[in-house]
Length: 196
Image 1 (tube, rainbow, N blue to C red):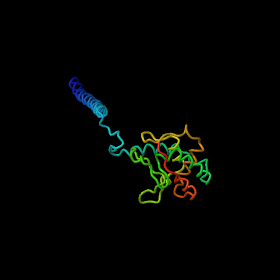
Image 2 (cartoon, rainbow, N blue to C red; image 1 turned 90 degrees about the vertical axis):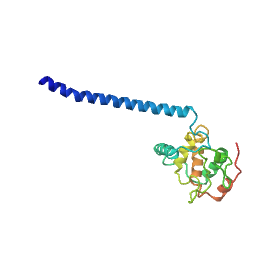
Image 3 (cartoon, rainbow, N blue to C red; image 1 turned 45 degrees about the vertical axis):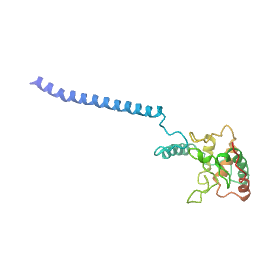
């Protein structure tokens, strides 16, 4: 009788072990199959990589989520350069030399910005349905982070090895205040867009 009880109790254990192994094999097979499908998709050039291609579903949301989290973690909260006329004039010089070709000037958009993906924002144009101009709704520290570090796969280069800290803060303060710049600065920013 004891022998019968022992054999009976091992049957469910064997079934449990068999189910667990089959489940594990199924999971591994599924992961390998997904990896093979993704690799084939990439290998045969189906990924939308041209600037005229439609973006992936949720591509903008996913990339912005990661970018925003990184900037929030690393941006300087208190700018070391004041938002004053001196910074605006110095920032204008930097902007016209380094930024205007892609981001346009007051009254004239860049001719090739719309052919980029994502489109290079025109930084002296009001947003649709609001009074926000360019990135004037962003903190200066956010704009500084983007200027210094660039944004991968967007065409936005990193300027931390090209410009000084002060130059990057000057242009960041200029852009953060694009909706309330003095008239003389706005006049200086009407200089024709330099083309590369």
